[in-house]
Length: 286
Image (cartoon, rainbow, N blue to C red; front, side, top):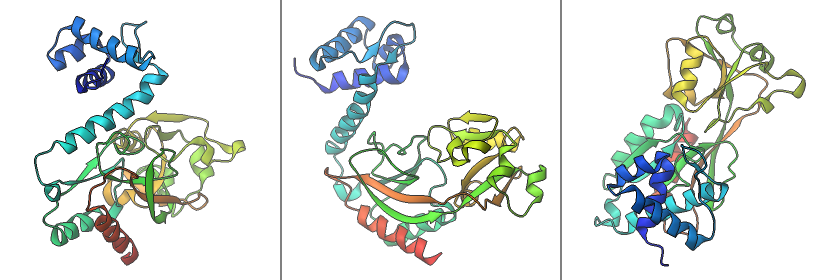
């Protein structure tokens, strides 16, 4: 059997919708036809991609790995078939949170002035690689160590960590805080794209309670209402100010690397080198 684009689109629809019923409705085909298409793809690959043992479908380990490859393949095909000239394609810059901090607006404005022929689209995507691994963006601003293969990275700087606390809390009244100060509170952790884990604290002094969230909005809300405190980097206040949140220096936590990342070995957007140069220039200007 020859795998066609319809097989990949069918599998991704099932993975994203979680049920055959919703995926079939999204693709405007019958459920039996969609099930046959999935079986054909699994037969060709020789692995089970979807666990059908529950009402709500779950991807197998092989299915989760194949999902990223299928998404990247479809994104590449869509880009190759785009009828617009390559120079007119927007440069899609992804980030999971904070972007370039207080330099984000200067970056966008300078880009528009210097490269009016190439639109720069800033996209927040709640994912460890900000959509880069799935082909949703061309380049991404990321923080922390990356484990995704096939990426080129450019270190822009190391950002100092800061404490993020409710504005009406006792902690907000201090000029600086330590990890021990925060450990007495529940700590909000962004488990999808954050750089903070309980391992940031010494093993003997870790927070007694954590609150797991999946995006920046949930993280900010948990802190604003007084349910938790958090740890972020010096870029966050520049893009995420909030009247119910206070940012304070965190004196005993290591800094976090800020990276620009893009795919290696495959055709990339020709404007990426210009974006890297501009980002480095803005960071150097401070």
